Each structure stands twice: as C-alpha cells, then as structure tokens.
Length: 241
Image (cartoon, rainbow, N blue to C red; front, side, top):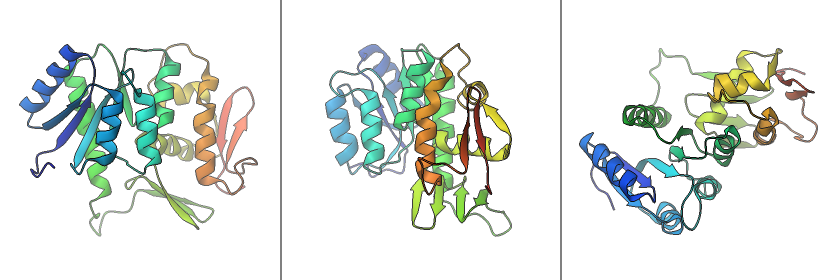
C-alpha cells in the first residue's frame, strides 16, 4: 500500500516503450506510479488495491480485458478515480465509447507529453474539489430543478431518493444543457463544444449517453419530461415541464 502523500498515477499500458516513457516523465514530475500491462491484471489491481490512486492513465486496447470494460467495471463498482483514456482508435465513435463507459477524458495517440500532464492535473484538481468544503462566502456551484440538485463542484446529482456520482463528462454535458435551458441543442454542438470531437461522425452515437443521463434525472426515463429529443436535430433540456 502506498503510504506517501505523493499523488499516485496508475498507468495501464501494454506498449512497453510508451509505458516506460510515461512512467519516467510522471516520476520526473513528482508523481508516484504503478504500471500494469495486462488488462486482467490491471482490473484486479484497480478493484482490490489499498493504494490511494489519484488518477488512472488507461489504454483502450489491452491484452485481456480492454480499457472500455475496465472503466465500466470501475464505475459499476462505485470507483470514481479520474480516468484519462488513451486511444489509437481515433474514430469519434471510439472516443464516445470510452466516455460512455465512464472515462473522464481521452487523449488520442500519438500525444504531446505536456498535454497529457495538463489533462491529468485538471482531472486531479477537479477530483480534489469534491473533497474540499467551500468557503462560506463562495456560493455552491449547482443547478436546482424539480426537487433535484446538480452539484457541479461535487460531481453529483441529488434526487429525492438517491445521490448519483457523475463523471466529469456527464457533469460537463449537464452543465452545457442546463445553461441552454429551453433551447434546442444540436448533437453536433455537443460533440464539438463538450467533447471536443470535430471529425465527421454519426452524431447519433451520443444517444446512448443521453439515455444514461435520463436514468439519473427522469422519474420515468422511457417517457422523459426534462431531457427531450428533438427529432433529427438534438436535444432540449426543460427544467419545469
């Protein structure tokens, strides 16, 4: 078990040259590191370790369990360590698959080291905010509707009967939609403005992501009242139907 206060980054990557480069540079930045090259071994470690992991750098294509299944299993087990997914599969549909599984961010290969470090620091900073009590003079970063509260700073959605932990991408999408309450939001705008996917893609690939958000915010997800589909265009968020 890691006892040091030094942030621990778990690197799950089977390309030896890339993994060693990441480990060297992360250690040079002052992080502790743990490396797994096999998906099955990585999942076992991530689910069972007592180490306090600050963030996970996760390749999507691994021997054994792939990265998509790993992040899905972590979220199912209520493990919300920030995940930065690396992918050589740069089709937008593949990126969206990672986000739908529960990844917090993605980075296509090849990537610039300074970009990876910046993304990791951002993820860890957001995660730290969840455990920091805001000063009394700081208003909470939240959106309230229909007896529900989205706490963007805490990455959670509080409903009458449950509290749901949100990934960064889920929170970012909910913020984008609630900021435009009542407006039609095209799928293409979500891809480009929220998820930074600019390539041509079948924008219907985000529909499964919306279905999951409806399970969080709707009394009857099959008959949504808040997160509505605008056929052929995108979505509209309605706070008070």
